[in-house]
Image (cartoon, rainbow, N blue to C red; front, top):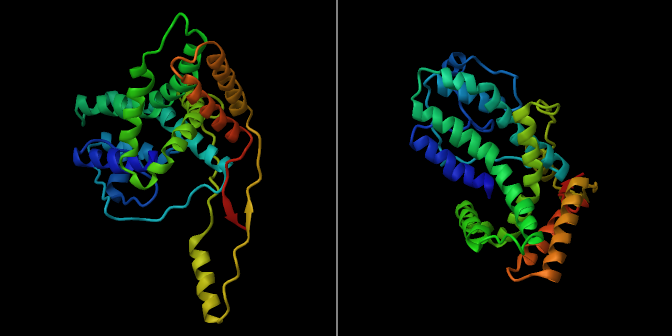
Length: 302
């Protein structure tokens, strides 16, 4: 849902307003002159496609998003691969903000408003603050308010109404997945810890800031299609795809997170419970334990 919102809203609005929007490495077409004018590909971050888009935008080039053309993409084959991908997608933009900020401020080809949108709206809010706020609010503030509920009470509009409206607006672009909304929220809250850590690593340029791990994908669709065609020519039925479940691995941070949330849920049930935060905390702790014990994966062709 988050990725669909990115394409259906952020990219479309950025294109319509001739504002900046990040170039996605898949299914993009560049003018050679634009790439040369921007300085070509650079390896200073793990998001070289976004880096090139920033530099081209600062040179005055405009981007057009054509949403009517659909292309196929492959997904990460395992949760481990997905975690590495999300680390790169969260750490890279934060690190790029650190490295490109002087260039953005010195640019004389774009307006001050566009600089503000690029630094504050695109980078700071969407690529850094969004991850930190999600993790701190859902996994720190709400549990902490439960523990000190006698002294501090979290208003319902802060705890429920505002987050619910933001979530529904993000999910509005993907009606076919509305039945998964609760699971998506719980999973995204767990992943927010991983993304927040990656964003901080990128900002301070810690040891993993330039870590590049190639994402394992579900398979080569072209090869699979060719195999099916070859089998048809031989008048043989295509062999049944053998499937295996990806091996599980334990994630300690998620288990610690689940344990803390479970403790807060039990505390809320025993001592207070008037705001029913324990319902959310029990569900969120269960999601953290599921992820922590590695019960998140994919069936992949062997």
